[in-house]
Structures are given as C-alpha cells and as structure tokens.
Length: 369
Image (cartoon, rainbow, N blue to C red; front, side):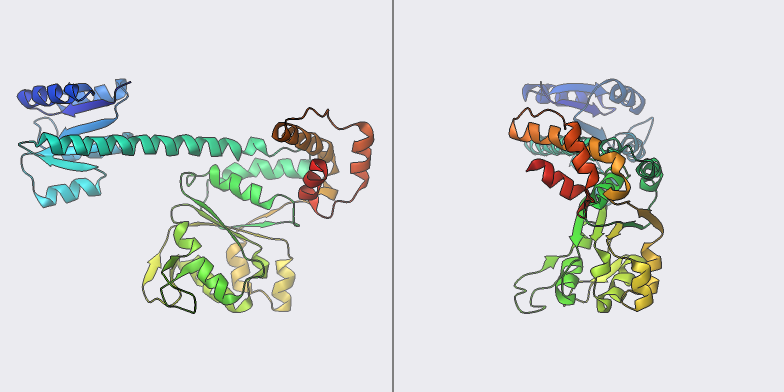
C-alpha cells in the first residue's frame, strides 16, 4: 500500500505539479487549496506526511500547524514557503514541524525529506504499537488476585497512575513490588516514556552515584568516557528505585535534592542537568524504624512516602495460592510446550500449608521445578 501525502497550498498550479511528481514516485497524493479543506481530508484519510504552505488566504500556515500538531501530534509536517527565512523555519520547528522547503522547490531535496518523514512516521507507529503491547502486558487486569487487600490496592492504582506524586511500595522480597511499579507507569501519561529500574542493593556510594546521575570522562579510575545516569535516561518517563532502604546514608542527601529539584550534576561534572521524571520507590525494610535508628533520613522518608502502597506477603493472602499456582502452571505449559493439568487438591493443600518466605517468586520457582 503506497504511503499517503497531503499537500495544502493555495496555488493550484503548484499543487498540480507537486501532485504529479509525487505520484510518479509512487505516493498516494491528496490536495487541498485551503486550510479548512485540508483539515477535512485529515479527518477522513490516513495521511503519512503533510506538506503545508506557509502563506494562505484563509489561515496562516503557522496557525494551521499549531492546530494540526495538537490533533495529530505524530504526523510529520513539512512547511513550504516562498519566504524562506531562518526565523520562520525555527518557529515551525519549535511547533513540531519535521522540516521545511523553499519555493521554487528542489524536487530531489523534497523526495529525500519526504522519505525521511515517512520513516519517522513508521518508527512512531511502531513505538505506539509496542507501547500498547507493553501496556497490555503490564495492565492492571494482568495482576491476578482473589485477596480483598490486593483488590483494594488494584482499585486505587488507576488514580495513583494519574498523579505525578512520588510513590513508596512496601513489601517483602518476592511480593510483586516491581509488577505494581510497572503497572503504574504503563497506565500513566508517561507510558510512552522509559521505565528505568535501579536496584540500590549492595552498591557503594561512588557506584550508586554514578549509576543514578552518570559521570564525566576521567571522573574516577576507569571512567574512560562520559556516561549518562539512570535519572537522565528516564527523562520523560519513570524511574523505579528498588530497595531504597539499602541506600547509604551519605548518599541520601544527594538523592533528596534530586527528588526535590529534579536537577543534578554528573560525577566529575559542573553542568546542572534538569530532568522530568516520575519517581517510584520500593523497599522490603521498615523505613520508619530505619529513621528512628538513624540509618535513613527522615526528610527523605517523608519525600518518598507521599503515596504509600503496602503489598501483603503471600502468607497473608493464601486465598491467592490456588489462583497463582494454576496461573504459573499455564505459563510454564506455554513456555515449555507441555500440557500439565491444573494443580490437584493434594498439591493445593500442600502449597497452602507452607509459609512461603520468598512469597510469589518462591511459589513461581516451585511450580516451574
């Protein structure tokens, strides 16, 4: 199926010439000699690339660009103008234009720009498709439970996902804290942004600081090149700080500043880097007790504990064991191409009698064996 191009230009002679040339290149071409007709075509047709004239009688091209990018933010728009000023090009790019062409049009240049725009549209479509697949994978509905406490947590997750507040997920190892964190991210406005996990366990202050904030070349022995940190990589998305209780006390003040200001310097650097990141934290420790003992900063605790979520251990939600056991049997049947039947009554009884110190992760491993 040929890629579709819409040309909006009030000069009909130019419309015809561009249409003929693009059709010869194998494109499906639609044309409009005014902004309103162009908007109607965008509503009715699936357009891959738009060529938009800068000057038209019914509406200014820049104003029309604003409308189009508001409605069709992933549509590549190439501005066309007889008044090829740098200022116009900069204004158009700031508003989301993909590129610009000046009249008289160099058709070889136009073909290259359109080809690049088509590739960008394909890439954006692919990203959107993958985002939707991941959202299905980590959707709230995929967190299975019969337990009332867990159902109450799941009921609150959509409203939690809609906020930008910092979250503290508490629970023993293996209870599914990361699954909850991913569900929050992939059901939020940041779903198209990255989800970056950092395991804070057993990392020295130097290594953790470099991991979180990055480092400049030569910052320390072995720093042979600049490296971005996880906060920088997570920009426009979410960062998941797992096992917050293990962060060295000497590092906690630096982290507090980043959580408050969303800015930092790489190790060995002086440039202040600003980021836009949603922070989700998790711990298997009692942080209130850690605050009392002086191993965790009180101000940092209150900063991350804006929305607390406490995940019960499996021994407190034994009504989930039959459901989870059969879920894992089905999972490993598909993985290993087997057809083991659901758990027997005897197996369920045995599973229910065990206390599961490793929680759901231990249950999953037991079923796989």
